Image (tube, rainbow, N blue to C red):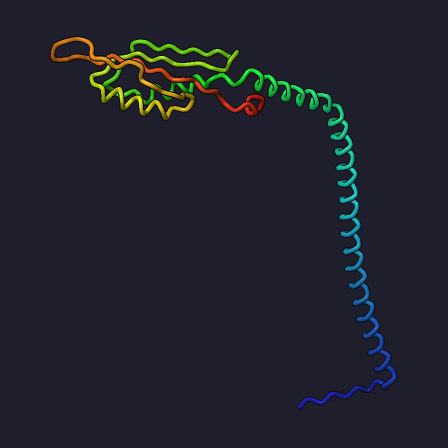
Length: 194
């Protein structure tokens, strides 16, 4: 058995207890003060950095607004150019899309048909034009099939076979034909200036 006996008077023991309590209180207060100082330092640093960023962005905005003002005449000039191009496009009409028409015609030629003459005309003054295709084939059905395919080519309209006659004699006669079509305009007027 362990028995402890304290010979100090109770006043001294109470004073030592108060001293230990005061030390704990000072330590807790110091820790809280240190924590509050650290939080304040972080908030102060963050606020300073944010203010510096705001100042930098304000200066950048002023520079950009000055650049916008410097470039405003060019923007107005570009708008006038686009309006003028649109007016010219409306006045003259749109030219035929030659590459699209030629690609459409060539993609649909059957192997039993070959061309002997191709003529295309376009008159911008009255917005008309036409295509005349002459060639030969082994039979009328090849010409008729190609004629139907040509009706689906963008840029061609009123596709008609004007002549389809048998030429030559013997076992291998050929069919000579002439197809005419009207050219329609190219891209839409608004897209030309973009």
